[in-house]
Image (cartoon, rainbow, N blue to C red; front, side):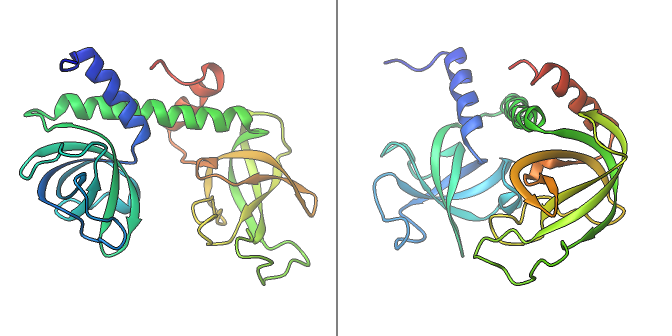
Length: 255
């Protein structure tokens, strides 16, 4: 097979952006692994110096200048000295980072087109995720947190390893974007900092946000709606309100 056409390459990169949590430009420094006990040596394993981060999780946002072990999809495609835009997912965090490659392309002379594509695809992906949360929400409200408290009679001792430690937040509603709720609504949230719950919303008194309230089949003291996903608390600004209004009425934008 010949080299991919620009259109085929664009489609391929689009798929890689959707699948990758860490996109960066880096140079292959040597064959092998920084952590052989975790990522065994092999013809598809290389040590890469991260030069420029294009898209990442919060933990890897400042990883430029450091090295990582990359396990490529095909042996022999990462020769020493090769400068590459990697689309990858982390598989190991520790003293170093190990990554599984989704795909890669040669680093371009001009990064503007590839970064523009990454931004557009990432925004579409984020819109899709938020649109799904909005569609499944019992209600979407703009409001401020009046108070938070542990439910009466609830034990402060976790029942199990991943116990959410439910707390109740009372939210004074200023505006309804979806559904119909009282002027003040009680909502559950996971107070736990366990790995399963640490990214879920943690309302604080006085905090104002757009809240996505979901029924999750749990009833704690009569409170049946909850904030359980990182997307369930959205910032208050004109751009975000317009985005939510668009997604509520028309779904994600065109891809």
